[in-house]
Image (tube, rainbow, N blue to C red; front, side):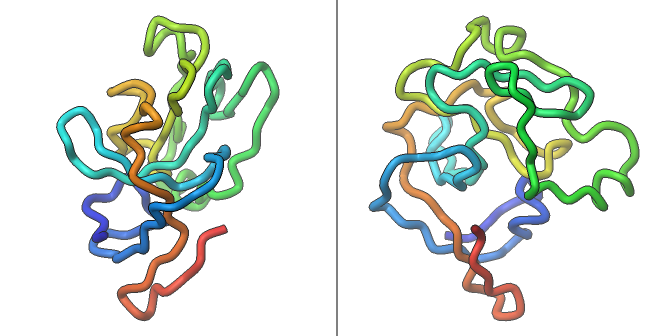
Length: 148
C-alpha cells in the first residue's frame, strides 16, 4: 500500500510503501491499522482508544479512563517547531455523543494531529472495517524501517 497525504508524519511520509498484514491478533493501543472509511477510502491511523474506554485530551495530554498516557511516537520537535498545541482539547462525548468507545470499535488518530482526518471527525472505526495492521515501510529504500 502507498501512503497518501501527511496525516501520519513523521511515522509515514507521502509515497512511502508499507506492508499490510491481513492476518493479525488482538488490536492493541498504538497499533497502526489500515481500514476503509465510510467513503471507502483506505486509510492508515494509530489506535488510541479501545472498546469500552473513555478518552479525552487536556493540555495536549492523552487520558484514557482518567489515566495519563504517554505517546512516545509523537515528534516533539515537530510540535515545538509548529508552535501551539498538537492535539486540541476534547472529550469523546463532545465528539461523538457517547462517553466510551463502542464495543467492537476503535478510536484512531493520525500522528500528525494538525493535519489528520481521523476519529475526531468520522467517529470510531468498526472492527469489520479494519483490513489489517502495518509496521513496516519497505520503500523508498532509504526509509526502510520496522515500527514497534
